[in-house]
Amino acid sequence: MSSSSTAPETTGAQAGDTGTAPRRRRGLGGERRGPDGLLGTLSKIVLLGLVDAFAVYVMFQLVAMGDWLVFGVTLAVTVLINWIYLRRGGLPAKYLAPGVFFLALFQVFVVVYSSYIAFTNYGGGHISDKDHAIAAIQREESTRVEGSPTYPVTVLEKDGELYMLTERNGEAVVGNAEHPLESVDAAMEGDRPISVDGYQTLQFADLLSRQDEMSSLKVPVSDNPEDGTLETSDGSVAYAYIPTYDYDEAADTFTNRETGDVFRDNGQGKYANDSGEELRNGWRVFVGFDNFAKTVTDPDLRDPLIRVTVWTFAFAFLSVLTTFVLGLLLAITFNKASLRGKKVYRVMMILPYAFPAFLSGLVWSGLLNPEFGFVNATLFGGAHIEWLTDPWLAKFSVLLVNLWLGFPYMFLVTTGALQSLPEDVDEAAKMDGAGAWRIFRSIKLPLLLVSVAPLLISSFAFNFNNFNIIYMLTGGGPQFPDASGNIGATDILITVVYKTAFSGTGIDYGLASALSIVIFLIVATISAISFNRTKALEEIDS
Image (cartoon, rainbow, N blue to C red; front, side, top):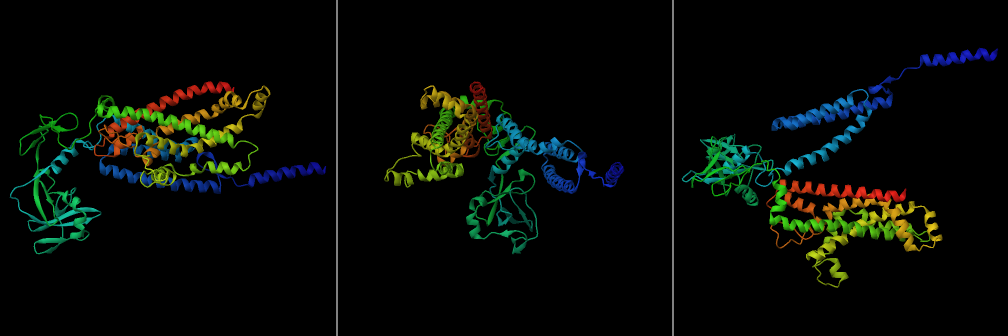
């Protein structure tokens, strides 16, 4: 009886507990929200607020610039992010959204934009659109007006930019290359304005230090480029200049005021006359496959590029081969159970892996300096060995330094692969009378390659584009004597791309983008073939 009478009480208590227990509130997506859920919601609101604030700021800037395409993309992405994180459910999308966003921004966009640039003439002399090119020609190509009066000027500085302060029709005016002359309140010294609040007046010593910048300063007289500019060479007196070329908007031509030569749009992003002479400033146009064809048809580029391509393949292959062989040899050596202190040895072997590659390249560049480097001065008794200036020695130096940097990685991966091999296979081979070399060549190496082959492929792709070691150690030099551009004996394709786009006077983003696409296709093709071949190794393991 007692047992049966207590059971309902227990059940009732449980029921009472169930009935009186407060229900936890459910958050977005239906999850129960306690203190941790509340903190997460607040964090979400704060982070979304920061993202939205930054997006609104960016969109205001885009509107001011008139870049409506990027504005539309930014608005769509912002709305999508808010929809993902404010709606209920969709937990996978909330985790994937940041990764997908940065993948699209830093990978997909870069590939798409580079592909677009590869089919244009974007580069030196073809930076902006046609309207900007016309304005630049009118502004930069100028001739002094004979018999024009002189203008007393004072050179000012604000936010790092130079301004010209002068007097016009009895009032002070100020302007710079981007802003035409406009009226301003200025302190006067006689008829000469000398200072303006908010601007720094440059003294004689300041003018000397910025002579080139001051001499190139062209201040438009008005919003109409045909009215000309004021220019100064000494910072005290300015002269009136008018555009050298008269622009006819209806005919879309430039006419030289002195010679009468007419320059027309040649369809290639330049204005040219009948004799082929081109004006300096141009604009971007679509050129199709011209950049790709240039790598084959232009002998000044084709011949050095062939040698660079051969060296790129050789460098990548030899780097993988030497680092793998040395790393595997050391891994086998330090994998013996009877070896004492092997942990210490292993730590010492991976020390080069701890140094940044670009810093190591600079250090080795100093060590291998022919004149006063440590290697020549100490190890070779002061001998003058041109490690970095002789073409073949420079290639050897690059491979040697890359071996020093790369073998610790191969040492680590092969050590792990060796330790994962079953010991009974080794013992069975010994019982069959196989020697150490036979066991390694016929059993261990094939099994090792099953796990290491994908890493060798990735190492080849990495060294194929190993920009740091080449640029920091040799800079791609020594330069080919018969090359018109800055292309050298140790340059690989990626350093040629960099030099084409960012160094020298003839920068060519279109050609550099075309070469980048070629590199991408080469690496993708080799990787696809290599990964397909690794299936044969996997069959051995199975």
